[in-house]
Length: 327
Ligand code: ATP
Image (tube, rainbow, N blue to C red; front, top):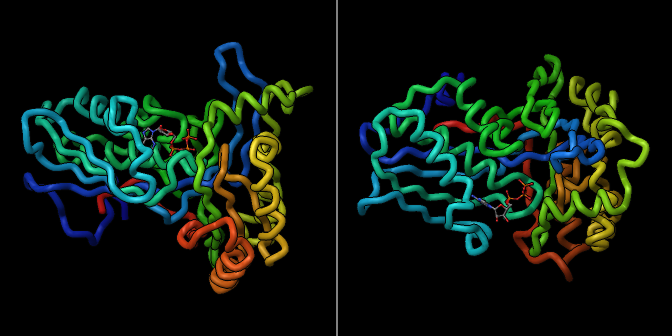
């Protein structure tokens, strides 16, 4: 059960002045359809977001000194900016604007599990977790709908990190429509192997390459989400989902990083029912038929890619996962 502030039932009630921990999930775009660049520089999107159980943790506590503090640990922590460009600072500024125990200085800690600049919206997950944690810590009493509005001010992927599950996003990705859970009697879960990459990719650079290659030529708007994808999700049918995964940025990402095309080929040869670049890359989302099949796929890919992918770069994940919540 989820309360208005993202609290899930059954957990120990946090706060009373002590630290508050919130989590938020990574996302995979099961479909990312991209229209032509608009005059304001943005590309209209038609996206099917899917949250997976690879989660960031954000802890909020009282500041030790006079002002706000931020620290980062975990995967890729060294390449996360600590300055005002970190989305968590912007989340704190927005939450503070909402009032509550106004302005008490806070100590924020991000514990990263999502690869930085990996196409899995890790920074957006941090911002979503920070909003939920600060809502509790400062006693803001913001309801879920208001948290999603604030999230939309932070970035186009942040509302989905608050919401979780499966959802269709339109516009810049910030207009969200949750999708119903899988039909009763179907498993519903999707079992993934995520092949990460040591070197991240810049989202603006991939969109610029999409434009340079003329990949939206002849389009006036983003293409639709494949009906087979929606049917596969509703039926809990991984093969149907896998056959309909689509990312319009993929040709641009593969042109910039041809090694990714090789990995997709290996994943399909190793039995994945589908494999796609996640978001703007470089993470590859490889779908398996079942949890045991995904475990076997992860082992097989680790052996096939041993020369280029060190242990720890191939991850197991499952979705749909819940959105940002108090841990
Ligand atoms: P995008 O959401 O732009 O598609 P992504 O999912 O590929 O990005 P992120 O890990 O969210 O990748 O990081 C993109 C960039 O955002 C980073 O290179 C970094 O400079 C900046 N950034 C800001 N805040 C954070 C954060 N809390 N964690 C990671 N990166 C952050």
